[in-house]
Image 1 (cartoon, one colour):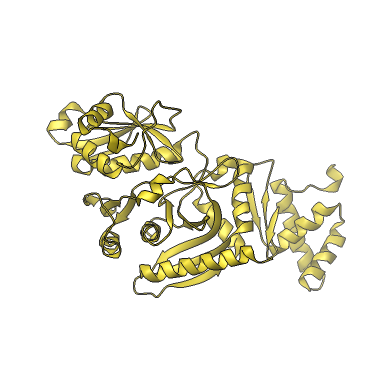
Image 2 (cartoon, rainbow over the protein chains, first blue to last red):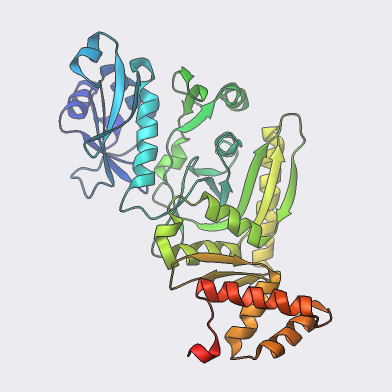
Length: 310
Length: 81
């Protein structure tokens, strides 16, 4: 059953009381929401996602609600509870959806059952995953959003999740977080893109979320082997250029961006050195998204032809 | 141990740490892990590897690398066995 299959009143009641077990691909989260307007926004953004029913093992339990009875009416605000513990400072209720998305990110990053995680966007084409590791603000969400409308499948704009079993990448596509100018850039880039409201006044400025293309959600149980690693760097006014990175430097990038590398021990080492063995590493500097997409397509073609040659 | 362009990534089973070694440290580790070797013999091999004279400076650098690798627990002096 999808979120969109549940009548709105029933969904609001379930979210307020027993919660829903939302499946986003690699992770299942038990979610409860006590704020009516947030139910509306959640239902819009997660309409295509399935509810696990009957539930299996949740990776996390997240509740978004007013921090107190008084704040519900006097100074409406939203807070998040993870596994029963309150975390993050409350924000004005009109920005509750940002708390939901941050909470889901936090749930992924801190899950005790979590597989190996690298802070990187990841997209797939021709059964090859392109990992895009970069610090916040480098344009990885913007680039992955653009690629998701130009023949690439969005696996995640935030976190690359590696399978324990075979080192393949487990998709976990969720609404793509876009900030400030990136919102209008993606809106102009792709008219089919659908967005949440714009949340103003956050610590990162204006934030809006783009719904992943339907294909990304419909295929989120299809894992993919890594094919190339491209570190995006947005530089206003620059033509798209690509530079090959030494493998050891690339490995260092991956380790630096791995969220839970030290606790993965040998498995983490084998996973990331395995990527270094099979993938080429690049730095992509860009400002124009169509140019960046062209470069990504060319890098993929080169990767496929190298793999095919004897 | 995984190596690219002479540099190696090593997983340390004792500490659980990953070490990313430069070209010379990688070559020292490669030679030492291939079998017990005298320091003088090792210095000669490193001098040939770098195409440099087997000087006092080089010996000092190799000794420092050996001490670092020993401290990390990646190698140990043969007389400690």
